[in-house]
Structures are given as C-alpha cells and as structure tokens.
Image 1 (cartoon, helix red, strand yellow):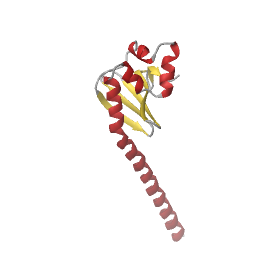
Image 2 (cartoon, helix red, strand yellow):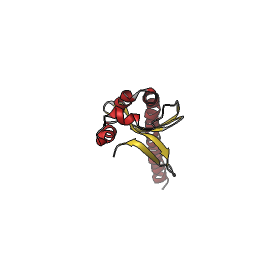
Image 3 (cartoon, helix red, strand yellow):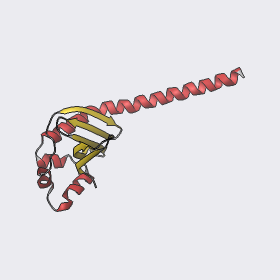
Image 4 (cartoon, one colour):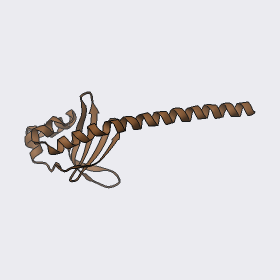
Length: 135
C-alpha cells in the first residue's frame, strides 16, 4: 500500500508541477504582451480619427461603418477617450485597458493587438456597455 500511495503522490506532484508551469507560461505571455497592449492603447487614445480607425479590429471596423459613414467620420461622433493609460490586464489574446477617461478592450489577431471595443462604461457586475464594438 505504501508504494501505491507514494506512486499516487509522485503523479500528483508531477501534475501539480506541470499545472504550475502552464500557469507560469500563460502568465508570462500575458506579462510579455502588456507593454505592446499599453502602446496600442496609448496610440489609440492620442490618435486622430484615421489613426484610431487604423487600430481597430476588423470586426469592430466593419460594425462601425455599417451606418454608411466612413470610419473617421463615425469615430468623430463618439465619446472615445483620449486620456492616459491607468491599468492594463491581459488574458491570453484579450486585454482590458483603463484610461483616465475610457475603458478599451483589445484582441490579438494575426497582425498584432487591435482595439475591439472603446467608449466603454461599466454596466455592473464586471460587464461594460461599449459604443464602439463588433456587432
């Protein structure tokens, strides 16, 4: 019985070690992406309408221009923030950035990090209502 117990303990320890390594790897990727996410969010906040359009995720851009306006025209009419980055949180291929005057959501695709939602306000229980987002 002792050998069966010690075998189980060895397997359990191995699984815990592997799980800890996976968590560290995922956390490491998130930490490694934070500067790039911060840079994209800062660029989005400080850019003019065309620069902001260039940083939108494709689905968000498509949703924004459905009304017939060009992206720069549509962006001008929205309360998109232009403040400084306050905090960045990255979860795999998604990120949330709090500016002093807005909350942005970003996603990473084949071309890099892109803004998937902007002009977002808290709507309770961790959810947000965003005026710029994919439909």
